[in-house]
Image (cartoon, rainbow, N blue to C red; front, side, top):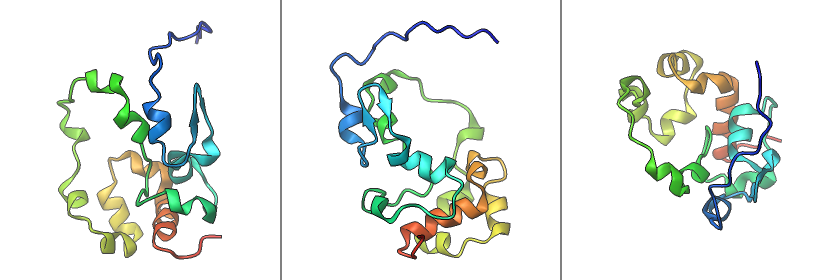
Length: 138
């Protein structure tokens, strides 16, 4: 595969909406500190725990965050998708906070069988849920 090392044009200009909106201050101009990023900790991190000092900024996120994507003016120009496979399942839409606390591996596999949430695995999602429910993780 041939990669082009040329710089990507700066479409941001003076906009700093993503930096200002990031709840963990993981973003600085042109840089992301993954050790502060909710998406890193809830999707990519493979450890048993999430540092307790991050909790106050995590709100109720248990898989990813994407606040930076939601506030980006460029993303408002995108077209809504017409792909039914991207829609949330009825099972997922019915989930309440108490349901997440008692989620077992069988139910996890049912709900997320065709989902990117499988990336974090059952154990990772349960870790994230425990972290949000005040159960010590460290």
